Image (cartoon, rainbow, N blue to C red; front, side, top):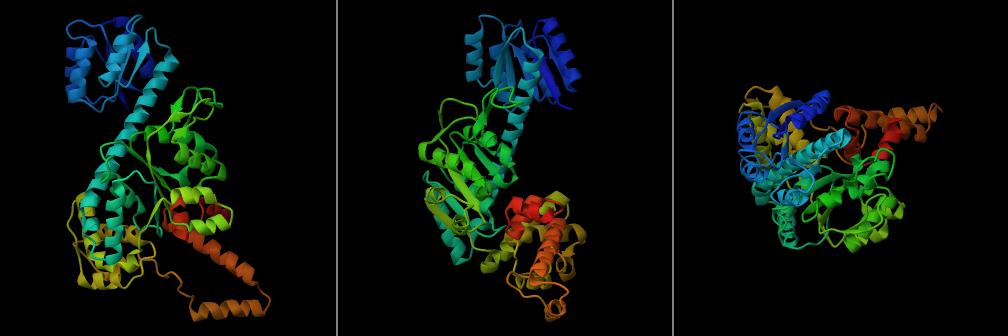
Length: 455
């Protein structure tokens, strides 16, 4: 249950706020002055603060200054009376999230709280990603022993100091998201916002409103103006993962953003300037996608300002042990137990082709550590590793049985291929715990193509 704190010397205002928000399943705390409000905060977890400007003992602006020092991550919404707008704007400059004029409408209050909570959650996620990027950029990845990977890291260091649009390519699971964070962490925008966007997870009909925002009344249900992800990333970096999953229309709008550095919200009538660094990643061959009419050629050339291809894990096994150490150290902290990796397990794993790359290695080690006592042995990892390697042919028995079925008119090559695709797709979805987006990435399919096959 989320908690709201109302700091206001008017009893009626506090009573109204309590009635409204308790009906919305919020816990509500109250204070009639800033000093007591700060004391309540020191002993309670609070998610959103509503605060009046004119109060006895300790007024709104001095209280806000103390709030920003002690509780910088709690959104504060200022309640203003007629004639206090200038003071409210000063409060915004001091770090208030928003302001509302009295008397407040119930729907506006509720919408403002939900928007503040969404914004706070987004910023929490951004801080987690920023922390993760910093740790990984300083970890074993930055000390690769593989020549190809060393070249990649040198390219990252070189281009991070610019505002070039960067295209990251490579197989699923090679660490494109980690590289995007490293690019941002080493750039002049490092202290600014970083927003990762999984383009394959955004429904096609919502893509434009999510990326570019919308105006109030733009469509049914648009009861307020909403900033898009590009606007939220203003001054920082936006990372568009699997951009090729977006429709041609949305691709065209992204091209315009890259060319003009302006966005127009859905339902809007004017362009807004943005200052944002764009990083894009894909595991698809975009030139093939262009030939097949699924990706815009003009967007490809605009994105390809600086391209970095990350090698698969099987081509940089010099980094295997340092990567394994990093993943095991993090998992040990999570599970609260220390586990060693036996030399026989290392030998087995080094002979694996790792079609799922670094992500597969991480998942195998996490699962093995959960199931073993104090040492990971071959039996703990053998069944977790994908058994058929890229390009590996079916066994002779499988081929013979299929040929016999065709020779006796019991099936056709088309049916065999269709059945094989269906079985493999279903099994990958099962092993991905029903995560269709991840399964599509592992299979090298568009998300919508996988859904078609599953249907």
